[in-house]
Each structure stands twice: as structure tokens, then as C-alpha cells.
Image (cartoon, rainbow, N blue to C red; front, side):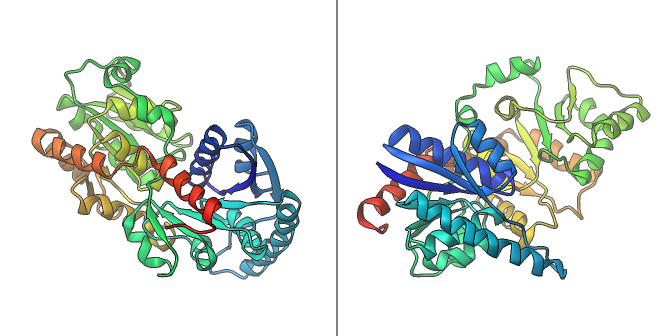
Length: 370
């Protein structure tokens, strides 16, 4: 039996891929899995809910452009020491990390202890944690090929894709449309800014509802919990109301149905969301979050745009007119939508977990990856 550490934290974009990898290990190998992350964190709650053993340590994201960064760095150094003790007691054979500030102490301690490390990078531009850890890693798994140039040449790299939830891969269009009560004739637009919503996308949609509805489009708009009342107010001010064809929701647990039902999606460029879009093969209009670290969301989005799988509207260009123009133009062009769908699907990696586990197995068997 092998002892394997899995770590990723801070945001769902790092945690869910780590949990998917952990689940793949559990199903396919005789191993003991320990999920490591920050104390009292989102990753602790989700890992324990998924039934995994969890060990925590102190960790903080570095506050940029502030003297607080000194205190944050000290906390992470304390966490590094705590993680080292956990790893020594666990007697790990391999550590797998998916990024985020909460993974840095765990993976850093593993490298100091001589434990082989496998990294997964979600974004086209890596975060500081993975760039720091990559120098001693046995291998790096990539979602976007462009990320490879940011890592050391001597470290083996594998284009594995990013693990997505199993239900995303199994959804059927008819079942998804039935869930929302849509017939199969009308085009469906899905709009989402992620779990927190996106203010700029919501503002643009507020001015676009009437024109889109008049054009025969059905809309699913996931506004974010804090924004739902403002969107309803914007509707009322235009003499509109929610209906079968205009469904406003703060959040939706069944994103598989939303992606399965739609013909076009408008959203941010988080790596996990884009991985789901690609696996389902949905054409997209991507509005990258402009304040993402290292502008990684725009780099993610441009990777899809370069493959003619998506169109990009920057946050500064986004308004009701630019959004309406893009949505109406694309939904009126069946051939282009079909091409974008095909290109998106070709970029998707539904077997990402298997690809990553194959690299992990190579490291366990040989001490390296080829």
C-alpha cells in the first residue's frame, strides 16, 4: 500500500480537481490518501465531506502590495514546519498538488523531505506556488499547453487536461432541457459569473434582457447570491419579469444541466469552468476577470479564442450593446456555432483524471516520469 498526499486549496478551482484526483486514486489503487490543507478551510470541509482523511496547518495567501505580506509569509513558514511533521509521520510515497496558497506548505515540506512531487497547473499562466515548487517537482500536468513555457525546461510536462465532475460528462441535452422546462426549438443562453457572480456581466445583462427575449432566446442567468435582488429590480424597471424563458438564479448546483441545455454560454475564464465548457463542447463568449493574478484569466480565454472555440470580450469592452451583438450574431450563425462546439470539444480532456494518474503511477514505479 502506498501513502499519497493530495493538496490544493484556497478556492474551489484548486480544491475540486484535487478531490477528483483523490477519488481516482481511491477507486483505482491500493493506497492511503491524506488530504493536506489550511486549518478551518474550504478544503478541509470538502475533503472531510468526501470521506478523506485530512491534516491541517497554518497557511495564508500573500497580500500583495502591502506590509501584511511579511506576516503572511511568517504564517506560511510556520505552516511549512507543521506540514513537515505531518509528512514525516505519514511516511508519504508521493505528494500531488493542484495549486493555491494552501498547497505551498504541504508540497514545499514534501520536497524538503525528499518525497516525489507531482504538480497540476490549471491556468495558462501559473500561480506563484506552482512556479516555486516546479523546480524540484518530478513532473507537471498541464491544462493549457501555453503554461509549459513558464516552468523549468528540465521538468517533464504532460498535457493532461483538468479533472471535471463526472456528472458534467454524462449529461444529455433532452434531460437537461426538461429540467428547465425548455422545448428543443428555442436557442438557450447560459450566463454565469461563477459562484459569487460578476458585476460587469450582470450590468450588461440588465440592459440586454429585453432585446434577447424579443429575439426568441431563452435565458438562464446565474447572478451570484449577492446580486439576485438587483437583477430582479432591473427587470421590473423595464416592465419585465421572470418566466419560463427567463430564469434568474443566485446559484445552481446542477451546472451539468445548465451546460447541457444551452447553445451558448457567457462567463468568466476560471480554469475549472472552462474545462467543463470544453468537455461538454459548448461555444462560449468569455469575459475574463480583469484583476486575476498575472492576468491568467485572459490568457486562459485567449487559448480558446486562438482555437476558434470561443470569442473574448474584455471587461472594459463589455456592455449591453456589445454583449447583445455577440450573442445574436453567434446564435444566428449555425455553422459557426457548430464549428466552435467541435473545436471546444477537441480541447476538452474528459479523461484528465486517468491521464494524471498515469503520470503518478510512473513516478511511483520509477521515481520519475517520461
